[in-house]
Amino acid sequence: MTTFFTSATSATSTAQAARLLSERRRTGTQGERLPESCRPGDLAAALAIQAFVTAELGATVRAWKCGTPSEDKLVIAPIYTIARAEQGHCQVWNRAGQVRIEPELAFVLAQDLPVQTEPYSNEEIDAAIGSVHLALELIDSRYTSPESVSFAENLADGLLNQGLFIGPQISAMELSAIHAGTREHLCIDVHTGAQATKQFKGRHPDADPRIPLYWLVNYLRSQGQALLAGQAVITGSYAGSFEVPIDAEITIGFGELGVLQVRFSTR
Image (tube, rainbow, N blue to C red; front, side, top):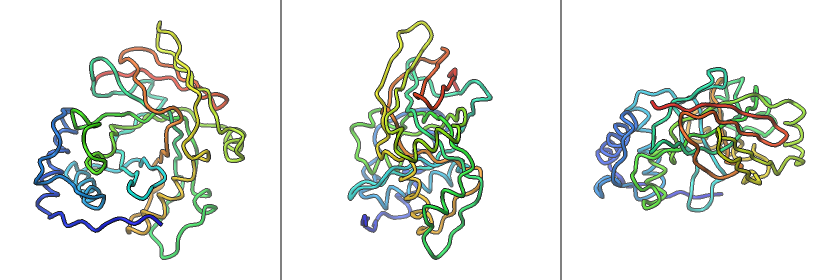
C-alpha cells in the first residue's frame, strides 16, 4: 500500500498557492513556479492546494483523471471542463496555434458511488459504469515550464489538465475485447487536415484501463468523497501526449475501437 506523508503546510500557504493557480486557470495565463513560501513540499500539501483551487474557482468536478499510484507519485486530478462529440468542436487555450492532447478512454458513470465503510469491489464499480467512450485529455499547464517544477507542484495544478473531449461510445463487443486482454495494443492514427498522418503503436499503461478507476473509487472513498452519476474518469494515455493544430479538422483512429473527430478553436 502506498504511503503518503502528512503535510505541515499552513492554511495560509495553501490558499496563497490556490489563488495563484486558479487565477491562471481563469485567464489562460502561465507563470513561474509557485513562490517558495507556498510551494507544496509533499503530496498531501499538493492535494490540499488542488482541492482549494476547486473551491476558489467555484467549479463543479465533472470528471477525474487518474493513474496507478507509485511509492512517490499519486496520479489524481479533478477535471472541470468537458466538451462532447455532438458539439463537433472544442475550445482550448491557444499555445502558438497548437493544443497538446492524449488519446484515452473515458468511463462515464451511470450510478453514484457514495462513501461507504467497506471498499467497493471491482464488480460493483463495473456495474456503476454506464458507458465507455473514445476521449482526448486536453493538456495545458499554469506553469511556463512544467517540466522544471516538482511532481508535487504539478499535482497541485491538476497534472497539466485543462479539460476533456468525450467522443463516440465504444461498442459492447469491443469493450469486452479490452477487458479480455485482446485489445492491449491500439494503432492510433492522427489525421490533421493536409498534414501527413501520424501513427502510434498505442498501449495503455496498465493493459486493462479499468485498473486505475478501481483505485480511484476506493481512494476517494477513503477520503470521504463520492463519485457521482454523470462524472467521467480517464485512466491513462494510449500514446503519450502530442500536439495538433488549432482550427483544423482532426480525425483520430483508435484501432478497432472507432474514430474520433474534433475541431479545436481558441477560448
